[in-house]
Length: 466
Image (cartoon, rainbow, N blue to C red; front, top):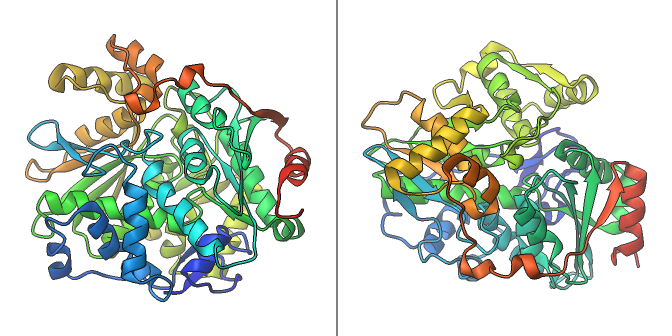
């Protein structure tokens, strides 16, 4: 399998190269040259398989030419052996139509673990045969940072620098990052928003001399390998609910579009998805883009669902690439306009092609709180604010009653105890595997949201240029 950039000017790479590169050298995102497909018989054969074996079957085409099945299986077994539930991503039934897909049984209690535990092992595997020290740069609105740090802390030949918006992540999210004191882990609190942090990451990659000197790579969902790992749980859940003989819908709380795009790829691969519901909070650029073609940035509004407090959804570029007929030059021109003007009009004809698959919803704080309360009252279950937004969107989608609707439960409620308690009157406790978090020493630096300050910080501490 070969990979091409959404902007058409970067070299075509294999899976190992694209994993280590992260962002394409032309500023675009890597995608497979073609979408592989699984037949109905191949999807049906996934029934009853373990999560690890499902992962091997789904990811096999994407790693072809780089990893053999036995190697991929060993990596997946190691990655998912750290999860607290034997099913890795178990389904929980709420009522006759609605289900939760619990993605928070990894070491940092969020869906990012599903991909990043594997990505950390892939980095280690590929670097073991190279005389290269990698500098991993990431931006986080909360969960990516802790999952990436857990996956990479202490690993050979890797430094990780993680930027988070100062004061805009929950205390649990912050402490899961800043209490990891491994010498290769560097936490930076940026005086700004997540979008500011994400823009700094892209600017560092676009600084060719800096990126080359420090051997930059990425753990955000701009890295294809991370997104690839997320495709698996769509197949795992859908097959358990009757696919391919039965169509299944998914509701995905999202800000950066990566998790939704993984579902889009699953549909391209042949999984019979009835609907992908893109659930946003009041930072609703994705809802406006998909419903009206208005992909324009406003100001970020801080909410109780901080992982969705985003205006620039970097993975949306991958969908736009498909909507542009995979015309890299045309998309590059459109993205340059967007980066300059902070707005882009998407023609109705482009959106029409996926109107039956992609839907969207905007859930305000009252709708989010109501979903949390209703889940306690009807199912005696606490859910976090992001999952609540997804569930509210699912319940409002108006899908036929014979279509099961799976809401992706993206984080454990204990990551957002104050918001959950305000909505439900019940305070979630931390699972035993993360007890003691509030007693541990923290370590992080606070920097202005300027490229000069962040690049100087990285240059002083990264081993790649030593």
